Image (cartoon, rainbow, N blue to C red; front, side, top):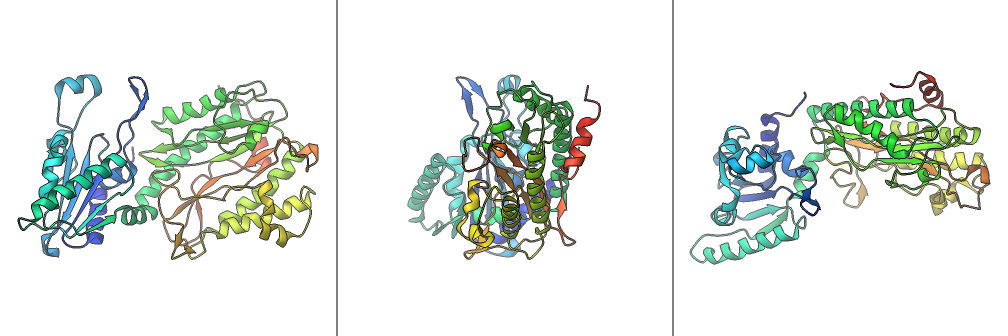
Length: 444
C-alpha cells in the first residue's frame, strides 16, 4: 500500500515554517466529528490541510508550529490530541495519545487536548505574527480571539503577543496546489481504481436496472480497494443526466437512454474525479452519438490545452469554441459563432466551467487568479477537464429528438513538463471503444 511518510509531512512543516518567518506561530485545527442523526456519526475524515501538515487522522487535535528569534533556532512542532483511554478505546478504537504523537508522528512536544487553552497562552508570547485558518470554524475563531485577549493581559507584564493575524490558508493552499511526485502517484492509484469502477458500470448496466443498483457496482469496486467515494456519486439516466448535481439515483434506467455517471474514489485522502456517459443498452442512437462526439472533441482539445504557461482558462475557452461550433453544425443553435461566445448564449446548453483543481479535496484549494488575472499552469498542478452538453427535456427551442440528452466527459489531468498527463486514461471514452466494451460478456 502506497503511503506518504513522516518525512513527507516534516518537509511540508519545514516549508510552512520558512514561509512564516521569525517570531511567528501557526495554529491548525482538524475538523470536528459530525453527527449523522441522533447518536450516529458520519465516519470520520480529518481536515485536509491539517492532515497535509501532520499525517494525523484522529479528531480533536490541534497542531502548533512556532518559529523563534533566529533561523538557527529552527522551529518547534507541538501536537495537542486525545489522551489514551482504555475504556474509550474499547468502544471507539485505538488512540495515538501524547506518547504516540511524539513517537509515531514526530511532534517535538505533545499535550492532552484538554490543556490547549492553558498551554497556548505561553506559546503566543514573544511572537509577532499569528497564522491560523480564519473563518473556517466560528467556534474556533472565538477561541483564538479569547486566547489573544487573555494573552494580551499577560503582555502588560512584558510578554509581547502577535500584532498581526494572518490567513494561514494563503500559504498552505498554495503549497497544496502543486503536487509532488508521491502525491501524483497516490492520485494515479485513486484514478485507476475509479477507472475500474466505471468499466464495471459499463459492463453491468442493462435496461430496467435502477440507478442505485448501478451506483452499488461503483461502490463495490471502491470498497474492495479500501477506498470511499470522493463525493456523492451521480448516476443519472436519461433526462436526469441534465441535472448537474443529481444524486437521488433512484430511477429506473431505460432502454434507449444514456446514463451519466460522475463518480470516483479517494485513496489515502487523495481524490479522483471521473465522468463518463454511455448508452444503457450498449448502443448510441444517431443523435446521442452526434452530441457525444462534439463533447468528446471539445474534451480532447481542452486536455491538450493543460500545458505549462497556458492560462488556467485556456481549456475552457478551447472547449466552448468547439461545443458552440458543434451545436451550430447540428442545427441546435443558430447565429454567429463569435457573437454566441461573446454573449455566452451557449449557457443554455453548457452552463458550468470546464474544470477545477483536484487534490486532497475534490474541489481542491488554490487560487485560480493572481492579481486579478487567470494564473498559468505550473508543473504538478492537477485539474479536471469536463465539458458537457445538456438539452433540457422541456426545451421547446430545440427539435424534440435532442431533448433530454445530457452528456459530460471528465478526466483528471496533470500539467507536466512534457505536456498534459491524463491520470484517468484507463477508462474508455470513444463511442467505438464504449460500444465494444459493452458488447463483451457482462461481469459476474
